[in-house]
Length: 139
Image (tube, rainbow, N blue to C red):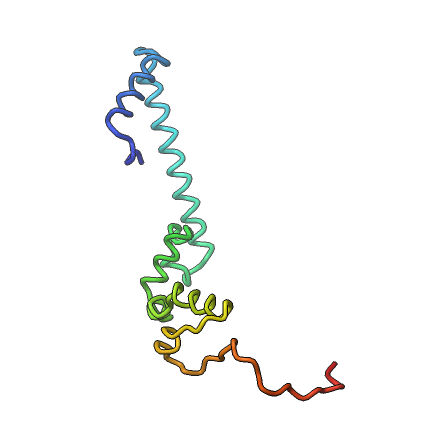
């Protein structure tokens, strides 16, 4: 529970507690705090058990920690049933953005055409030689 408190912070809290509550009342305050924490934990565990019972047997492996978005995403990326690692490794955002800016600025991107795997790219910088037919019904 207190994993991120250093020794200096702990000593400071103890000194502050002695100054605020006094040495006579401090043991009773510590007992009251620990009793309250224990009751909160019991309440939390009973609420979790009630939720698991209400969800039914389909969710027997459900963990409440999975509701944390970071944990959920990490678990899904490690699962890799969908092939997300291949998609993530095959997508180079910097290269794609460089190609888009080259096309927008009208520069010839030699690296994108030579490293292109599909070969079906449309060159947006070339102007068509002929106009498409005019369709009066479409307009």
